[in-house]
Amino acid sequence: MLKAFIFDMDGVIIDSEPIHFDVDVQTMKHFGKEITQEELEKFVGMTNPEMWKVIKEEYQLQQTVAEIIEHQLSSKITLLQGIQIEPIEGIRELLTSLKNNQIPIGIASSSPRFFIEEVLKKFELASYFDCVVSGEEVNQGKPAPDVYLEAASLLGVDPKNCVVVEDAKHGVAAAKAAGMTCFGYVNENSGHQDLSKADFIIHGISEIKVENLL
Image 1 (cartoon, one colour):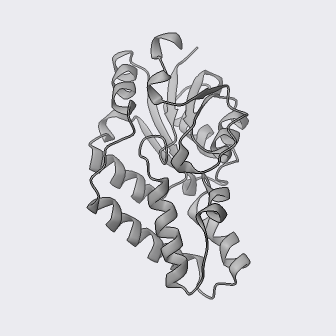
Image 2 (tube, helix red, strand yellow):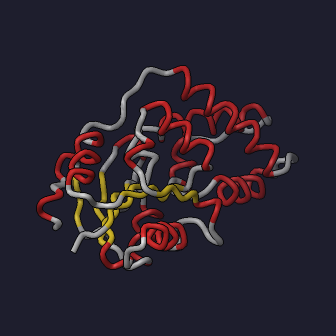
């Protein structure tokens, strides 16, 4: 029985993976290295510190993880503020339906809190959410369940009564490890993601009907 709904953000609320891919490629170029989108796809759903720790070692970057992230995040915020985009189709309607049915709503994202808040501010969505959790604020990021368990705790709902929508393999794994029901949203811009562990596979957010989950 649905008692809370938790959203991943990147690739679910905002079609932001192209932004991430572009900025991450440019960040690597800034530091004198080349990386492809295909190589970055395996990191979708992971936190910045976890991703850049691996990339730093694989590509032998001389900069610290903190220095890399500082440059990357600054570039992302600048790009986000300057582009004209809307939330993914169906998101505003789903949020409104959840609110009308008095279902608590959370965000459990691997992005830094600052980026999450910038997204919510840009699209004027902050008022819909009862809690926001960044994967950087818990012990382990996705695919570990920590960020989803923390969101459920803040919402005061048993994880088994939470429904999640995710677009990435690591995110689906995290939601299922937390014992939650998971919609796997196929977003082509999120790269080749294995969503087979999700309970339901959808190709549009509008396929989620709140009345069918109550």
